Length: 166
Image (cartoon, rainbow, N blue to C red; front, side, top):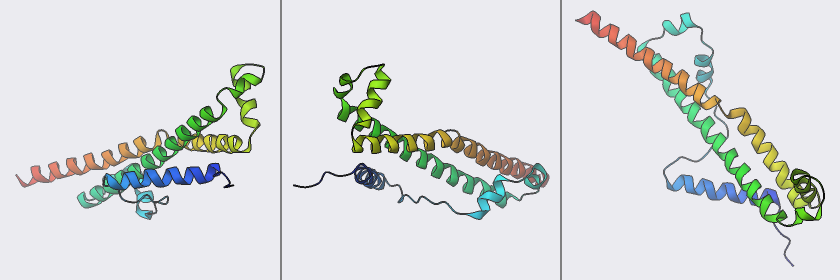
């Protein structure tokens, strides 16, 4: 008899299927790490330093920050998919079992989950992914706003340069 897949194996399979889907719509392969030290420089600049940037540096800052924003949002979306998968799986597995227990619906739900190693692991995955979603929820838009700031600064500087020539 074949041993059933673990929750972690099922999650890995889900990630693989979704990665393949993203590839078919033209997205590059997902990389968990986003390491470009220059992006940190732009995120931590004070106003005086920002005002001294050239047009090219403003464009670079906007591009790097926009890329980081996309990466953070994509990471958040991966975690949301994991939360949804775990929640749907939990509901499917314990459907009907919760009525065996007493207490509030939440109490019955968690009692039913505690009865099985697989559902306990699913709940653990769900909680972990939800914590990551909660942590990232507004970060991507904040980084995108910062990218837009550099883009708008670049446009303003280009406009001033054009006015000086005419």
